[in-house]
Image (cartoon, rainbow, N blue to C red):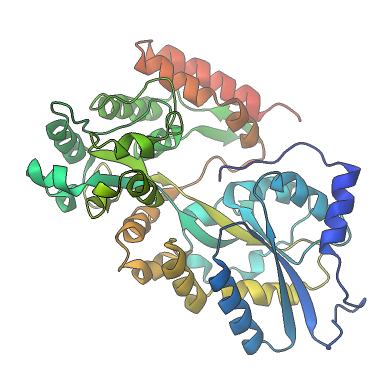
Length: 422
């Protein structure tokens, strides 16, 4: 996820958290009407108001002994707020956490170990990009909630004009060939900014490499391995088939704004980016399609970073059984299918991908999510993203510097950041 923990927690913030979590329940956890009341923190815009209302009603009808109070939280500053809540004696009972944040919260001892619940929660079918970062030191703390990942958003009219069938693009070689045909005249074959490091990570994973590896409790940057260097080599080849800046990411300038100008055949984005493009240029409505990022071979889609959320239970919750019941319902078949359709998300399990078959963007995401990955599962990764030597490395290579030397430098920076005591 985009948001990360902020260091420390103030006394004032702690007081605010305690106040926000407080309720009229008695010491047994029962509310005034005799039901067990649970407090749930969900993030802003992770679900619509309509879905939230429908789910809470359905849940309470199915479990009349439990009353749900949902509190919507803002992403800005959420890491510090959750940290404070986990350290308190009055934490909420269920918290939605960004999938890559779980390790940081688990490290503090503030989360319930749910390893023995994996089977009953259909864990064998969880998306790896949600399940893996939801674990810490071999124990499962986060239960996969929903996922989103990048796909290729393309101009159907430009593909048709060039005689290219997007559905036939299954491999990276085919993608390069098609993009080269599109990169003619004033049209960019692809707009790929030089520092889109999540896209690079996918190519590195495709090659069998990683951003960092762990041995004996020590993490080491791995951009200088042969596998990772091959991933960067492919990125450089693809990036050259357009006019994306070499020293900035997808937010500078916003790539949806660039595509809206009408001279870009493809971008790598979440499907929601297509909506932004159309808002900027309504003439492109009906002219945007989606396909999964291609892999090295036709039988496996390209690796992607899986963003999304997990659900966790604080150890400070006095209503852990009711909290688990809530999580079991929200992550179960019925509500996962409804959530995927309502929000165009990828369901938390590979076996539910058909739920979004009618949504082209979500269907492309679901296909890619089967090969989803997460960033290195350690609290130290937050320091890497804060400094982000990966972006500097990418810009250096794309502007002509020696890939091996720059990769070694970036790997050393990653190693230092991940192993610096906070």
